[in-house]
Image (tube, rainbow, N blue to C red):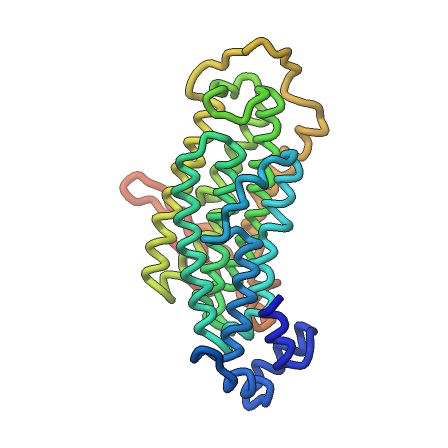
Amino acid sequence: MIGILILSYYSETLDFGTLIERFTTTGSPFAQAASSATFLGVSALTWGLTLVFVGGAGKSAMFPLHVWLPDAMEGPTPVSALIHAVTMVVAGVYLVARLFPVFSIACPVALEIVAYTGAVSALIAALIACTQTDIKRVLAYSTMSQIGYMMFALGVSDFGGESGLGYTASMFHLFTHAMFKALLFLGAGAVIHYVHSNEMKDMGGLRKFLPITHITFLIACLAIAGVPPFSGFFSKEEILLAAFHSNPLIYYVALITAGITAFYMFRLYFSIFWNKPFVSHGESHHGEGPASMLFPLAVLGLLAISSGWIPFGEFVSTDGKVLATETHLDFQHFAGSTFLRRDRDRICFL
Protein backbone atom coordinates (compact mmCIF):
# COMPACT_ATOMS: atom_id res chain seq x y z
CA MET A 1 0.00 0.00 0.00
CA ILE A 2 2.84 2.42 0.81
CA GLY A 3 4.44 1.66 -2.55
CA ILE A 4 1.15 2.31 -4.35
CA LEU A 5 0.74 5.62 -2.48
CA ILE A 6 4.26 6.71 -3.46
CA LEU A 7 3.72 5.87 -7.12
CA SER A 8 0.28 7.48 -7.21
CA TYR A 9 1.54 10.59 -5.42
CA TYR A 10 4.24 11.29 -8.01
CA SER A 11 2.23 10.18 -11.05
CA GLU A 12 -1.02 11.78 -9.83
CA THR A 13 -3.02 8.77 -10.96
CA LEU A 14 -3.95 5.22 -9.98
CA ASP A 15 -4.65 4.12 -13.55
CA PHE A 16 -2.09 1.59 -14.78
CA GLY A 17 -1.90 2.91 -18.33
CA THR A 18 -1.53 6.54 -17.33
CA LEU A 19 0.99 5.76 -14.58
CA ILE A 20 3.16 3.74 -16.98
CA GLU A 21 3.02 6.47 -19.60
CA ARG A 22 3.99 9.22 -17.14
CA PHE A 23 6.92 7.32 -15.68
CA THR A 24 8.34 5.97 -18.96
CA THR A 25 8.02 8.95 -21.29
CA THR A 26 11.37 10.65 -21.94
CA GLY A 27 11.61 14.00 -20.18
CA SER A 28 8.39 13.44 -18.24
CA PRO A 29 8.15 15.84 -15.25
CA PHE A 30 6.47 13.07 -13.25
CA ALA A 31 9.41 10.71 -13.73
CA GLN A 32 11.91 13.47 -13.01
CA ALA A 33 10.15 14.41 -9.79
CA ALA A 34 10.00 10.79 -8.59
CA SER A 35 13.65 10.20 -9.47
CA SER A 36 14.97 13.40 -7.89
CA ALA A 37 13.14 12.98 -4.58
CA THR A 38 15.22 10.74 -2.31
CA PHE A 39 15.04 9.04 1.06
CA LEU A 40 18.17 7.47 2.57
CA GLY A 41 19.90 8.06 -0.74
CA VAL A 42 17.32 6.07 -2.72
CA SER A 43 14.90 7.71 -5.14
CA ALA A 44 11.19 7.79 -4.41
CA LEU A 45 10.54 5.86 -7.62
CA THR A 46 12.87 3.05 -6.52
CA TRP A 47 11.24 2.97 -3.09
CA GLY A 48 7.75 2.86 -4.61
CA LEU A 49 8.52 0.05 -7.06
CA THR A 50 10.48 -1.96 -4.50
CA LEU A 51 7.69 -1.74 -1.92
CA VAL A 52 5.12 -2.77 -4.53
CA PHE A 53 7.32 -5.76 -5.34
CA VAL A 54 7.70 -6.64 -1.65
CA GLY A 55 3.90 -6.70 -1.36
CA GLY A 56 3.70 -8.93 -4.41
CA ALA A 57 6.48 -11.12 -3.01
CA GLY A 58 4.47 -11.68 0.16
CA LYS A 59 1.43 -12.54 -1.93
CA SER A 60 3.47 -14.98 -4.01
CA ALA A 61 5.33 -16.52 -1.04
CA MET A 62 8.78 -15.34 -2.05
CA PHE A 63 11.64 -15.79 0.40
CA PRO A 64 11.65 -14.66 3.21
CA LEU A 65 7.89 -13.98 3.15
CA HIS A 66 6.93 -17.60 2.53
CA VAL A 67 6.26 -18.84 6.07
CA TRP A 68 2.47 -18.73 5.62
CA LEU A 69 2.61 -21.22 2.77
CA PRO A 70 2.35 -24.54 4.71
CA ASP A 71 -0.71 -23.33 6.65
CA ALA A 72 -2.46 -22.54 3.38
CA MET A 73 -2.49 -26.28 2.67
CA GLU A 74 -5.11 -26.96 5.33
CA GLY A 75 -7.96 -26.15 2.95
CA PRO A 76 -9.71 -28.55 0.53
CA THR A 77 -7.55 -29.75 -2.35
CA PRO A 78 -9.67 -28.13 -5.13
CA VAL A 79 -9.23 -24.82 -3.32
CA SER A 80 -5.48 -25.43 -3.18
CA ALA A 81 -5.51 -26.15 -6.91
CA LEU A 82 -7.15 -22.81 -7.66
CA ILE A 83 -5.05 -20.80 -5.20
CA HIS A 84 -1.68 -22.26 -6.15
CA ALA A 85 -2.21 -22.70 -9.86
CA VAL A 86 -4.13 -19.80 -11.35
CA THR A 87 -5.22 -17.17 -8.80
CA MET A 88 -3.94 -15.84 -5.49
CA VAL A 89 -0.32 -17.00 -5.33
CA VAL A 90 0.55 -15.80 -8.84
CA ALA A 91 -0.98 -12.36 -8.24
CA GLY A 92 2.42 -10.97 -7.22
CA VAL A 93 3.94 -12.04 -10.51
CA TYR A 94 1.10 -10.42 -12.42
CA LEU A 95 1.52 -7.17 -10.48
CA VAL A 96 5.21 -6.92 -11.35
CA ALA A 97 4.45 -7.84 -14.97
CA ARG A 98 1.72 -5.18 -15.13
CA LEU A 99 4.20 -2.51 -14.04
CA PHE A 100 7.08 -4.02 -16.02
CA PRO A 101 7.63 -1.02 -18.34
CA VAL A 102 8.21 1.19 -15.30
CA PHE A 103 10.55 -1.36 -13.70
CA SER A 104 12.53 -1.87 -16.90
CA ILE A 105 12.72 1.65 -18.34
CA ALA A 106 12.57 3.92 -15.30
CA CYS A 107 14.12 1.82 -12.53
CA PRO A 108 16.34 -1.15 -13.52
CA VAL A 109 17.71 -1.33 -9.96
CA ALA A 110 14.32 -2.47 -8.66
CA LEU A 111 14.22 -5.07 -11.42
CA GLU A 112 17.53 -6.52 -10.18
CA ILE A 113 15.93 -6.98 -6.75
CA VAL A 114 13.11 -8.88 -8.46
CA ALA A 115 15.60 -11.09 -10.31
CA TYR A 116 17.72 -12.12 -7.33
CA THR A 117 14.74 -12.56 -5.00
CA GLY A 118 13.10 -14.86 -7.53
CA ALA A 119 16.25 -16.92 -8.08
CA VAL A 120 16.93 -17.38 -4.35
CA SER A 121 13.27 -18.25 -3.70
CA ALA A 122 13.23 -20.82 -6.52
CA LEU A 123 16.30 -22.60 -5.17
CA ILE A 124 15.34 -22.51 -1.48
CA ALA A 125 11.79 -23.73 -2.14
CA ALA A 126 13.10 -26.60 -4.28
CA LEU A 127 15.44 -27.67 -1.47
CA ILE A 128 12.65 -27.48 1.12
CA ALA A 129 10.37 -29.54 -1.14
CA CYS A 130 12.95 -32.35 -1.05
CA THR A 131 12.44 -32.67 2.73
CA GLN A 132 8.64 -32.73 2.87
CA THR A 133 6.59 -35.89 3.45
CA ASP A 134 3.10 -34.36 3.13
CA ILE A 135 2.24 -34.53 -0.58
CA LYS A 136 0.36 -31.21 -0.54
CA ARG A 137 3.29 -29.45 1.10
CA VAL A 138 5.63 -30.80 -1.55
CA LEU A 139 3.37 -29.24 -4.18
CA ALA A 140 3.08 -26.01 -2.19
CA TYR A 141 6.84 -25.50 -2.09
CA SER A 142 6.96 -26.55 -5.71
CA THR A 143 4.60 -23.68 -6.44
CA MET A 144 6.87 -21.28 -4.58
CA SER A 145 9.83 -22.50 -6.63
CA GLN A 146 8.02 -22.14 -9.96
CA ILE A 147 6.84 -18.65 -9.05
CA GLY A 148 10.47 -17.86 -8.30
CA TYR A 149 11.15 -18.87 -11.91
CA MET A 150 8.50 -16.44 -13.12
CA MET A 151 9.88 -13.64 -10.96
CA PHE A 152 13.51 -13.91 -12.00
CA ALA A 153 12.44 -14.26 -15.64
CA LEU A 154 10.88 -10.81 -15.29
CA GLY A 155 14.00 -9.60 -13.52
CA VAL A 156 16.40 -10.63 -16.29
CA SER A 157 14.20 -9.26 -19.06
CA ASP A 158 14.59 -5.98 -20.90
CA PHE A 159 11.98 -3.94 -22.71
CA GLY A 160 11.19 -4.38 -26.40
CA GLY A 161 11.98 -6.93 -29.08
CA GLU A 162 13.88 -10.13 -28.43
CA SER A 163 15.50 -8.60 -25.34
CA GLY A 164 12.04 -8.89 -23.76
CA LEU A 165 12.07 -12.70 -24.05
CA GLY A 166 12.22 -13.04 -20.26
CA TYR A 167 8.93 -11.21 -19.86
CA THR A 168 7.18 -13.35 -22.46
CA ALA A 169 8.71 -16.51 -20.98
CA SER A 170 7.55 -15.53 -17.49
CA MET A 171 3.95 -15.08 -18.61
CA PHE A 172 4.20 -18.25 -20.69
CA HIS A 173 5.35 -20.21 -17.64
CA LEU A 174 2.56 -18.68 -15.57
CA PHE A 175 0.16 -20.01 -18.21
CA THR A 176 1.59 -23.53 -18.53
CA HIS A 177 2.12 -23.79 -14.76
CA ALA A 178 -1.61 -23.25 -14.23
CA MET A 179 -2.29 -26.43 -16.20
CA PHE A 180 0.13 -28.88 -14.68
CA LYS A 181 0.01 -27.51 -11.12
CA ALA A 182 -3.80 -27.67 -11.00
CA LEU A 183 -3.48 -31.22 -12.32
CA LEU A 184 -0.96 -32.09 -9.60
CA PHE A 185 -3.16 -30.77 -6.81
CA LEU A 186 -6.30 -32.46 -8.10
CA GLY A 187 -4.33 -35.68 -8.55
CA ALA A 188 -3.08 -35.35 -4.98
CA GLY A 189 -6.69 -34.88 -3.91
CA ALA A 190 -7.71 -38.10 -5.66
CA VAL A 191 -4.90 -39.95 -3.89
CA ILE A 192 -5.85 -38.51 -0.50
CA HIS A 193 -9.49 -39.38 -1.22
CA TYR A 194 -8.45 -43.02 -1.69
CA VAL A 195 -5.80 -43.40 1.02
CA HIS A 196 -7.26 -41.04 3.67
CA SER A 197 -3.80 -39.66 4.41
CA ASN A 198 -1.48 -36.91 3.20
CA GLU A 199 1.70 -38.72 4.21
CA MET A 200 3.83 -40.47 1.61
CA LYS A 201 4.67 -43.25 4.08
CA ASP A 202 1.02 -44.38 3.88
CA MET A 203 1.16 -44.66 0.09
CA GLY A 204 2.91 -46.76 -2.51
CA GLY A 205 1.85 -49.10 -5.33
CA LEU A 206 -1.29 -47.07 -6.07
CA ARG A 207 -0.87 -47.19 -9.85
CA LYS A 208 -2.94 -50.41 -9.94
CA PHE A 209 -5.78 -48.92 -7.93
CA LEU A 210 -5.77 -45.41 -9.45
CA PRO A 211 -4.86 -45.88 -13.14
CA ILE A 212 -6.27 -42.60 -14.47
CA THR A 213 -4.86 -40.59 -11.57
CA HIS A 214 -1.52 -42.35 -12.10
CA ILE A 215 -1.27 -41.46 -15.80
CA THR A 216 -2.38 -37.84 -15.37
CA PHE A 217 -0.09 -37.32 -12.36
CA LEU A 218 2.82 -38.68 -14.38
CA ILE A 219 2.01 -36.26 -17.21
CA ALA A 220 2.04 -33.36 -14.74
CA CYS A 221 5.37 -34.51 -13.25
CA LEU A 222 6.93 -34.70 -16.70
CA ALA A 223 5.60 -31.24 -17.51
CA ILE A 224 6.91 -29.55 -14.36
CA ALA A 225 10.25 -31.33 -14.74
CA GLY A 226 10.63 -29.76 -18.19
CA VAL A 227 10.64 -32.95 -20.22
CA PRO A 228 9.83 -32.45 -23.92
CA PRO A 229 7.31 -32.34 -25.49
CA PHE A 230 5.25 -31.45 -22.40
CA SER A 231 4.24 -27.85 -21.75
CA GLY A 232 6.73 -27.03 -19.00
CA PHE A 233 9.64 -27.76 -21.32
CA PHE A 234 8.82 -24.90 -23.67
CA SER A 235 8.23 -22.23 -21.03
CA LYS A 236 11.18 -23.28 -18.87
CA GLU A 237 13.64 -23.39 -21.75
CA GLU A 238 12.75 -19.84 -22.70
CA ILE A 239 13.26 -18.67 -19.12
CA LEU A 240 16.65 -20.39 -19.03
CA LEU A 241 17.62 -18.86 -22.37
CA ALA A 242 16.68 -15.38 -21.19
CA ALA A 243 18.71 -15.87 -18.00
CA PHE A 244 21.66 -17.28 -19.95
CA HIS A 245 21.94 -14.15 -22.07
CA SER A 246 21.28 -11.70 -19.24
CA ASN A 247 22.75 -13.05 -15.99
CA PRO A 248 24.95 -16.19 -15.96
CA LEU A 249 24.76 -16.52 -12.15
CA ILE A 250 20.96 -16.65 -12.18
CA TYR A 251 21.09 -19.00 -15.15
CA TYR A 252 23.17 -21.58 -13.27
CA VAL A 253 21.00 -21.24 -10.17
CA ALA A 254 17.95 -21.84 -12.37
CA LEU A 255 19.58 -24.81 -14.06
CA ILE A 256 20.41 -26.44 -10.71
CA THR A 257 16.89 -25.70 -9.49
CA ALA A 258 15.45 -27.39 -12.58
CA GLY A 259 17.37 -30.55 -11.73
CA ILE A 260 16.20 -30.45 -8.10
CA THR A 261 12.62 -29.97 -9.32
CA ALA A 262 12.81 -33.16 -11.36
CA PHE A 263 14.25 -34.99 -8.33
CA TYR A 264 11.60 -34.05 -5.77
CA MET A 265 8.70 -34.44 -8.19
CA PHE A 266 9.68 -37.97 -9.15
CA ARG A 267 10.45 -38.74 -5.51
CA LEU A 268 6.82 -37.81 -4.93
CA TYR A 269 5.58 -39.78 -7.95
CA PHE A 270 7.41 -43.02 -7.08
CA SER A 271 6.51 -42.73 -3.38
CA ILE A 272 2.81 -42.58 -4.28
CA PHE A 273 2.46 -44.95 -7.21
CA TRP A 274 5.37 -47.40 -6.98
CA ASN A 275 7.77 -47.88 -4.06
CA LYS A 276 5.89 -50.68 -2.22
CA PRO A 277 2.57 -52.57 -2.44
CA PHE A 278 -0.31 -50.58 -1.01
CA VAL A 279 -1.64 -51.98 2.25
CA SER A 280 -5.12 -50.97 3.37
CA HIS A 281 -5.50 -49.94 7.03
CA GLY A 282 -9.11 -51.01 7.32
CA GLU A 283 -10.87 -48.11 5.62
CA SER A 284 -13.52 -48.97 3.07
CA HIS A 285 -12.11 -48.07 -0.33
CA HIS A 286 -14.59 -46.79 -2.84
CA GLY A 287 -12.63 -46.97 -6.07
CA GLU A 288 -10.71 -44.28 -7.88
CA GLY A 289 -13.45 -41.71 -7.75
CA PRO A 290 -16.53 -40.50 -9.62
CA ALA A 291 -16.50 -38.91 -13.05
CA SER A 292 -16.66 -35.46 -11.44
CA MET A 293 -13.14 -36.12 -10.12
CA LEU A 294 -11.67 -37.95 -13.10
CA PHE A 295 -12.94 -35.72 -15.91
CA PRO A 296 -11.02 -32.60 -14.74
CA LEU A 297 -7.89 -34.76 -14.46
CA ALA A 298 -8.26 -35.91 -18.06
CA VAL A 299 -8.87 -32.38 -19.37
CA LEU A 300 -5.94 -30.90 -17.46
CA GLY A 301 -3.77 -33.81 -18.61
CA LEU A 302 -4.44 -32.91 -22.22
CA LEU A 303 -3.76 -29.23 -21.51
CA ALA A 304 -0.51 -30.07 -19.71
CA ILE A 305 0.62 -31.81 -22.89
CA SER A 306 -0.65 -29.31 -25.47
CA SER A 307 -0.46 -25.83 -23.92
CA GLY A 308 3.27 -25.51 -24.53
CA TRP A 309 2.75 -25.53 -28.29
CA ILE A 310 0.88 -22.20 -28.29
CA PRO A 311 2.93 -19.44 -30.03
CA PHE A 312 2.77 -17.31 -26.90
CA GLY A 313 4.99 -14.55 -28.25
CA GLU A 314 2.30 -13.65 -30.74
CA PHE A 315 -0.04 -12.71 -27.90
CA VAL A 316 2.14 -11.42 -25.04
CA SER A 317 5.26 -9.26 -25.23
CA THR A 318 6.78 -6.30 -23.41
CA ASP A 319 5.89 -3.67 -25.99
CA GLY A 320 2.69 -5.17 -27.34
CA LYS A 321 4.33 -6.07 -30.64
CA VAL A 322 4.27 -9.63 -31.93
CA LEU A 323 7.40 -11.65 -31.27
CA ALA A 324 7.85 -13.59 -34.50
CA THR A 325 7.61 -17.22 -33.46
CA GLU A 326 8.13 -20.34 -35.50
CA THR A 327 7.96 -23.97 -34.46
CA HIS A 328 9.96 -26.57 -36.37
CA LEU A 329 10.43 -30.16 -35.34
CA ASP A 330 13.71 -31.62 -36.47
CA PHE A 331 14.68 -34.99 -35.05
CA GLN A 332 18.41 -35.36 -35.34
CA HIS A 333 20.19 -38.61 -34.56
CA PHE A 334 23.52 -38.40 -32.79
CA ALA A 335 25.20 -41.44 -31.19
CA GLY A 336 21.92 -43.31 -31.23
CA SER A 337 20.01 -40.54 -29.43
CA THR A 338 17.12 -38.43 -30.66
CA PHE A 339 17.07 -34.69 -30.03
CA LEU A 340 14.12 -32.35 -30.36
CA ARG A 341 14.84 -28.97 -31.88
CA ARG A 342 12.38 -26.12 -31.62
CA ASP A 343 12.94 -22.74 -33.23
CA ARG A 344 11.30 -19.79 -31.45
CA ASP A 345 11.80 -16.07 -31.75
CA ARG A 346 14.40 -16.63 -34.45
CA ILE A 347 16.56 -18.46 -31.92
CA CYS A 348 17.33 -22.16 -32.11
CA PHE A 349 16.94 -24.16 -28.90
CA LEU A 350 18.74 -27.47 -28.90
